[in-house]
Image (cartoon, rainbow over all chains, first blue to last red; front, side, top):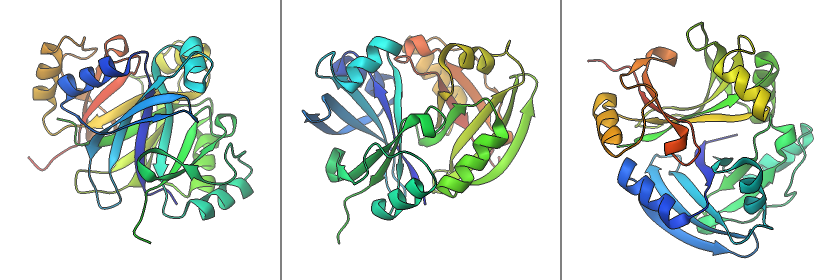
Length: 141
Length: 141
């Protein structure tokens, strides 16, 4: 069902500083920047690797304010890994299967995510403490 | 420098229960189990995807006791993402470059990791709160 580790989402206080760090220290390159009022973040995707199953990224996330999911995460935990996103080929089928397995779905239906993908989050309490995202990359179909 | 997301390391209280969850919910398959007295863990690697740059895994980690790095992590944070491992082709060159950039190295020289890899950890305080591991897969050379 999972085709790749699509991305690791990392919460940071200062997006520009985090980008500069990952670029200069690890040689990564930003391939997308977005701002999402709905999710309350400014974000950047840095490409780690290309593969037949799709690209893997580091996603850097800066909250738009303290009263956002990532803002509350930073207040509680400080900077660090916020979530893990896995690639799937059919997100609706994956959600149906995972929901039937008893995992609570934060998003019962896919919604728009970064870079044109369809995404959905699973409840971390049902995934061993890991906020888990499913990502179906935009396809030709 | 980074060739792939090699693995996401996830701390859990009960390795067998975590394996059963990832297998049944996401259809993943265990490809390796190891016990490391040095690192104080029992672990399993579950393959997520194969790619030319190497395979990506979920690494499930159960501490051998409370007075181990993963045991202390669980006591402080509960279950969740413990670290992120990135593939590199030349771990010694990567450590030299990253150390020169000012990141403190937990392992100044590579040591033996899972599945025959050479690994080294970077200090999370210098990597935006993310315990970061470099992984050079065992090669033919």
